[in-house]
Length: 247
Image (cartoon, rainbow, N blue to C red; front, side, top):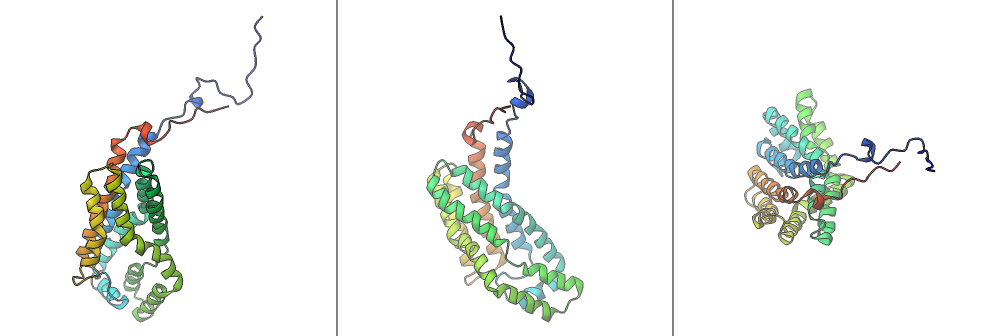
């Protein structure tokens, strides 16, 4: 005699839709591949069209924005994709290389992602300058406010990791790309050159926004190494398959 055992309430049969969740590994893999270079492309364009000279004083920045507020506004809007996507971009780089070079990925990628978060606390002086011009605020007052914000110890402490990342961090990411070999070596070379290009053309004798734009364009090429690695791997290489739902 066969005895029937009733299933507990809420349990699902092995063949029910709930017990076979959708496999979204391909979606996440391609999404990370697309996202990786985007914030750096946006930052390169923003630096290319902003009317103020990078590295200029607060007074000079406000004056340049007042002379060409349209370009200033476009540059600020291009900065929005950078703010929204820079951390996912760092995560994409880490996840692409965590199995090939786990220790280097942890040190370089982990610090870079942390630094991107810290940079979000940096006061946006260009936005203050644009609002000052559009609303007709007293420029002397807002320049003084922006200068004090920039010089505040909280700002200096939070922005320091970002400054280290855009110099030493990008070189470290270039080394990671070179050692992992998940993308062509030219991608690693582009990342290795990004920081020196910015230092030579912006912080050196030639102070031009085009130098910063070129530097972040090279950074975007470097982060495309994560995109290439993502597109080359299979879903099984990317992640484990979804778990079967247990009732």
